[in-house]
Image 1 (cartoon, rainbow, N blue to C red):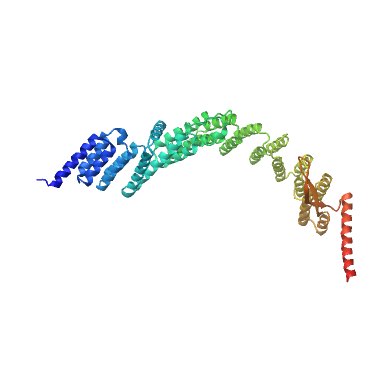
Image 2 (cartoon, rainbow, N blue to C red; image 1 turned 90 degrees about the horizontal axis):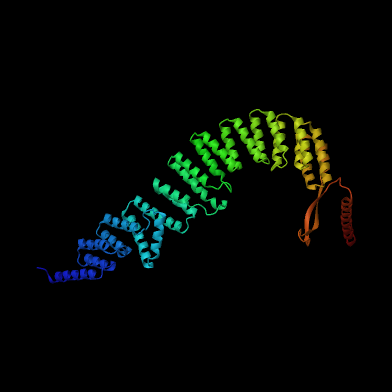
Amino acid sequence: MKEKGDVDLDKATEFMKRYVNEYPGANSFLKLGKWAEYEAKDMSFARKVYESALTELDPEESRQAKLFRQFALFEERQGEYERARVILAHAVKLLNLGTRKRTRNETETQAEGEEDLTKDERNRREDLYKAYVNFEKKYGSKDGIETLIVSKQREDYEKRLNNDPLDYDTWFELAKLEEDHGNQTSCREVYERAVSNVPPTEEKRFWKRYIYLWIYYAIYEEITMSDLDRASEVYKTCLRLVPHKKFSFAKIWIYAAKLHVRQKDLTSARKLLGQAIGLCGKEKIFIEYIALELTLGEIDRTRKIYSNYLSAMPHNCRAWTKYADLERSVGETERCRAIYELAISQKALDMPELLWRGYIDFEIEEGEGERARKLYETLLERTSHVKVWISFAQFEGTNVGRGVEEARVIFDRANNQLKDDGLKEERVLLLDAWRVFEKAKGDSSSIASVEAKLPRRIKRKRMRTNPDTGAELGWEEYFDYHFPDEQGAASSNLKILEMAAKWKKLHSSGSDSDSD
């Protein structure tokens, strides 16, 4: 026989059931579940209530975050941790809270659906996800927690890419995430989606980041997946996509060719580099092609590449010098000399000093002092730079040159030439170098002779003017040099100043004597 309290509890339970039937909704089921757990103490009935809410309510009601959370909390209170984990995982997946990767269309659909959510529901979904993370921290394994966090990161990346599919930095981060935590299929899918977002305009500045997606994709296939054929296909696809008539990327050609070398397919590598020279023609490609052939010991092929290189860039002094060094390294002295001769005959050179220095050093090392001397004389006909004069004089003082006396003759020639040209600072540099030379090769009298030629440094003032308008900007101080062999007005003025200084000093000392 039931007691009065039991009869009232049964009636209350029936009343709660009728309430849920009359007003079916998430809130009604949650109240009934709470009643069954705390008042009726019937755990199986409470579980049945939560399960019915998920299956019997319409999708809009059954997918509310608070329903899943309360159900999971109920199972957690009962010690059914695995049940709670399944509920939370199902909720996070169902509500698209980051537990799976979605295609672009699915992401757009989710974004449209989230726009219809209320602020409270969005907050509840965030709380549900946090509850899942906390649950895993309390009862899950390290791998489970890591998987959950990675899923959330993946979801964030997908949202950013949905807003801006040309955000290549985000693609890099998502691809790295998939490489570290995803599988082969998911990683390739991300790379394929990433490279499908081609820059909208054919301007190189928009392609500089995009092109690295292809490079990373190919490296992933080669290094991680050990699939060299697929990596080669990635490079080929990229090269077909780049508008080479407007711009190109030397690094893509080079990486693709080196991949062929690693595949031991030298024919394809050479063919690709030859095509790169025709379509791209950048210096890096010539350099890499030459390095490849030199590694293989193909001197004749290297010569042909250098010929094409210098035909395309006859002004490039580094290329001429490297070509000459090649011929010298294989013992072709006359070929080396002919290349240098052809090089210095070019009308325009980017670094002629490098070329002439290389040619002169070559002749000196070969012991051809007379040839080196002629080169210096030819160079001085084109330029009277002080460094050329110093180098020429120092050369004459070596074993290959004619000796110390001839070096002094060159120094003296240089001094007179720079004097005629009015190059004072250059003369100072020359005389300093001459003095160092005499200290090493000469004696005290020769050193004194050079030091007698050294100038005095004088501080002077001059008016600064605006180069555009000619307006005066004010006085500025500068240093000038007066050489002992200078004559004319400048020397007379200097003597007058010296006499004035002596007179002032004498007058000052005389005044002091009178006062005493």
